Image 1 (cartoon, rainbow, N blue to C red):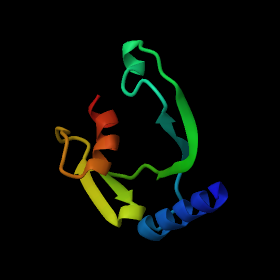
Image 2: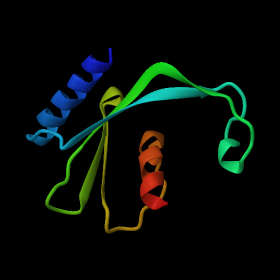
Image 3: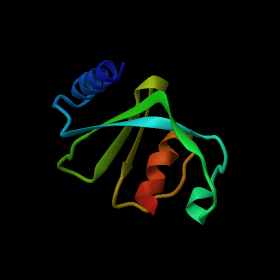
Length: 102
């Protein structure tokens, strides 16, 4: 399952951007049995990895445009990294934008 997800992500990136991705990242999903949103407040938590994954393909470009693609949602969000970043109406993109904003 993981190898197929990685290959599908690589293939989709090359199809969209006509070049191979510079980096591929694969991370398991997790659930919190107890302690939702308290881990960063030094509370007790019991997280566990699950058999769902997120896979990212990234590469630099020659301008300041950033393109986020959610293949499973058939959706794209584009922004300029020089513009002020703020949350948008696409919840999936906000997970990534949150790290750019912080």
